[in-house]
Each structure stands twice: as structure tokens, then as C-alpha cells.
Image (cartoon, rainbow, N blue to C red; front, side, top):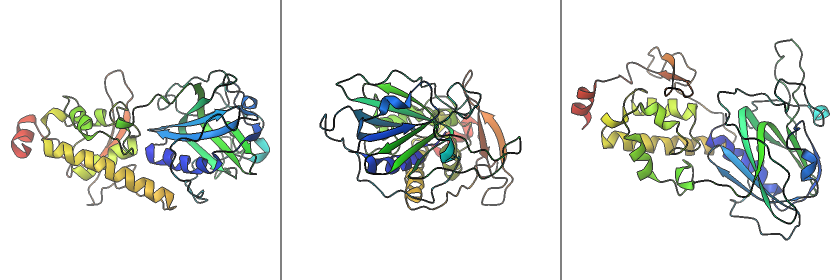
Length: 326
């Protein structure tokens, strides 16, 4: 699933269309019914954590756009994680899921699509991206390799919106549902100016592995597996270290790492730079040590692959941890 920095990149692709009317729709979604957006006005776009919210109104003057940041020009060299063909933009692609999408059930929150917006009131379209979810502006994505059957069929977008200004947006591998408002908590968003460091530090102090806490969206909304692996390595903390035995200074350094790495990732995306990781999906760390890989997760929860260096991130006993860093 795209993490906070990439979803904010999608937000920058959408914001130039705020204030425009949808004049044509298409896509493979069956539950959402793309035609329900016909003639609506896109009035606002907001991103919170890993979710994107788009506000649509039936009339142009229903309400002013919200506090979206100034639009950035679409980056044509954005990381292309999925492909689609314009010839298939209007037909289902025959995938296994009911709505034509494809994603890992383990990684995608269950956002069930609802009914079309009620007449006379603005509604928010909540978008939850799948494992390779993406948004493309004024172009369709293309397949970069053949599938398991050996053909090069390009998957169809879930939703295509053409606007009165002449451009269009194509949404891939995502689930969409209508809501009355973006029910979110900005204090948990790692890329929000309102991110609450104190709340995050308190959460990290729990008597559970820090790799579990970092992925808890109640405290670190927008943080995903890439950020988790990278910030733990940079902080020299073993993923299974209990937060309760880490010193306050080490927890503070971890929160600093989360914010700094996420901001740098977003800045690189907006400038069209490729993402570089030090341990995620690597065999050796920058120091040349062999990395270990294992799936970790809370009992009954998602087990996420974790890469770490046993030399740079040693797992210490509670007594040694407390004596060395308290």
C-alpha cells in the first residue's frame, strides 16, 4: 500500500483539477458506479495518512475549496507502480476481485464502497489504495512486463474522471467509498504540521516491539513498512526492542527519524527523484553486513516483512538496554 509521502504526491496531481466539473466518467468499478460522478464539481482534495479524500458537489457554488496546498505540476516521471491502457479505461479487466481491482488482502483496509452522493449536499469520496495503487494525471499507465500468462495486457483503471478543463485523472488499484466528511485526526499524520510528537512518544513507550507500534495508524498515520524498516535502521534499534525499555532520548530520535525520512521522501517524489532505501528489500546494509529478514506482527495481526542488521541493530536484554541508554 502506498505510504503517506506517495499519497501526498497523488494529492499534488489532483489539486490542479479542484474547481472543475466532471464532464465524462469511466472505469472498471462496479460498486462505485463511475457515472454517479457525472456533472459533479470537484471542490476540494485532502490527504490524511494513507487515504485521499475528494469532495464533490452537485453545483459549482456549493462551497469554496478547502485548505488544500497550492497545486504542484504533475510529475511525468513519477514512480510507475502499475499500468493501464486507455483502450480499456471503460471496461472491467476480468480480475478476481468483484470490482476489477487487484491487491493484497493483507495490506488493504476494507473500505467498502457506498452509494452515490445525495442530491443537494457535498460528499467526500474516500480513496484507499491497494498494494500498487496509483493516480495518473492526463495519461494512462502502461505495462512494463508480461504477466504470469505471458501476455502484456494493461489493467484497466478503477475510475477515470474527465474534467471541463480538458484533462483527466485515472485511479488504479484502489477502493472508494462515500462519506459525509474526512473523519481523520491530523495529530496522528506523520506529514501534518499538527502531528503530535508527545502522543507519538507516549505510544512508543508501550511494552511491545517498536515495529508493531510504528505501523499503528492511530499514532503514526501514513507510516508504512518502508518507513518502518528505514527509520529503525537509521536509529540503530532492533525491530523487536520493547518500547518500554528504550530511553526517552532513543524514542525521541526514532520520532525525529520518522518525520525527517517521510519529509525527505515526499520532497524527492515532488522533484521526480527515485527513492533510495538502505535496508528495505536489500541483502546488505550500507556497512556491508548481511541483513536478516523475517515477518513480524502482533498476535492476530498482520505479519509484515522486516529487514534489519544484527550488527547495527543489536537486540539487547532489558537490563543491558536500560543500563546503556537510560
